[in-house]
Amino acid sequence: MKQTPWLGFSIDRAASTPVFEQICAAIRLRAASGDMAPGSKLPPTRVFATELGVSRSTIVTAYEQLVAEGYLSSQQGSGYRLCASGEVEMAQRQAPAADPKSGAAARRGGAQGPGSASPPQMVEAHIFRAGTPDMRLFPYRQWAKTVARICRSDPQAMFVGSRGFGSLALRQSICDHVAEWRGISARPEQVIVTAGATDALEICLHALAQSGDSVALEDPGYRPLQYFITAQGLTPEYLRVDDSGAVLPSGPVAPRLAILTPSHQFPLGGAMSPARRMEFIRWAIKTEAWIIEDDYDSEFRYAGRPIPAMAGFDHLHRTLYIGSFSKIFSNALRLGYLILPEPLVASFANSIKRFGPKASSMPQQPLADFIDSGEFYRHLRRVRRIYAERRRFLLDQLSQDFGAYGYCVDHQAGMQVVFHLTCALQDREVCIRAAELGLSIEALSGFVQTPRPGDGGYNGLVLGFCGYSEAELQQGLGLLQQILQLVSR
Image 1: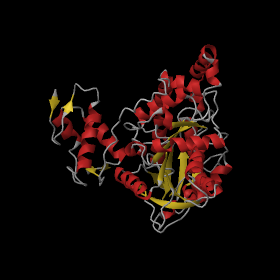
Image 2: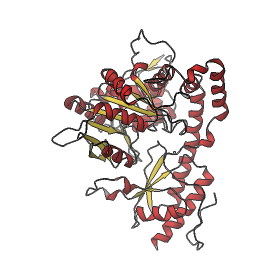
Image 3: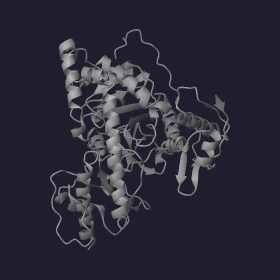
Image 4: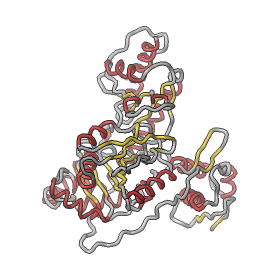
């Protein structure tokens, strides 16, 4: 049965697509076609739910997903409004053409009050280290069973057949994963199994850039990336980040590459708007540049589904996609992957032959089996739930007990949050004091390469939460509160 709502689109209750996804798709379509003007106010959730004959929670879920993707904006008391998204259209998933050469295989103690005079005590764990997964949650038994099964049934698979681009079975599993989670349609021949994200980036630089070329980097951005770029003889060009994401390069000579984190900007945490994504894609086409999308922790989105990758918008035309298993599965396996546009496959194959693959062969077949059996997704669902609880605990505590010092912007994603300092304290001094007590807090200002007037100096604290229990986070917050009180004096 179909029903026609106020916005003029239909809900098909017999379809396999969930209702909230049908609502999202219809609003995206109207945003892309211009049927809804930027700034248009959407129906209140209760009114819209009644109009559609669905629960209010379904409407809220759809709206919040579109907020996360950058199509809508929300403000308490003002409802939801359409952002200026320009010519945006979600990438339509297409079945990749069959390749006759390939088979079907495929980051303790309570907080003391303001009157506490006791000195802070050092902690053993490096609490608040950003980007650290909690390896105590790793499915050791299930993983051991998978490895043992491969050893018994096909031991050769752990040592051979993984040359060049890597295990065909794992590359097929990666294609299935990114199609479902990231909206990317690719064939196994376009996938390179790498020894993590840094290895993937190094492969890209060897194949696409020459000494002296400029590379566009987000600012603030991942600090080691700048050192890595300069070590390769390349020149970084820094792109400031605004509410829509990184701004486009504006120099007289276009950079050869742009390295972006559009789904979850590091370290600020926001998502690049659909309009800005399309602007970057058009820029890359016009200048014949390449976009390298670093999608380091996109699976950790705690409201709605993960935001589709820029490579999905671009249909892998000018965008190379880097993914990693270090954040979502294990930081010990050192496995990641690189997905290439079709025209680059041959040149990257030559580059791999020249420099050689670095990814270990042994875990590739077990990981493919772990993904295909569903154990990988059971683990992912579990850690997402636990990390979401830890994130909510951290944000609640910061809001309740640290409001005099600053605030957090909740992007409902990622493995860290930024606590923006609004007082006279300097983030670097706070972090030095924190390090003396065993806390691993990074200063937001340390990620900025080119300070600009009006950016507030990016004065804040980057706090990781995934690798720590609520008790450990509470202990760290107690110490942080005492440090802020001492530095304030």
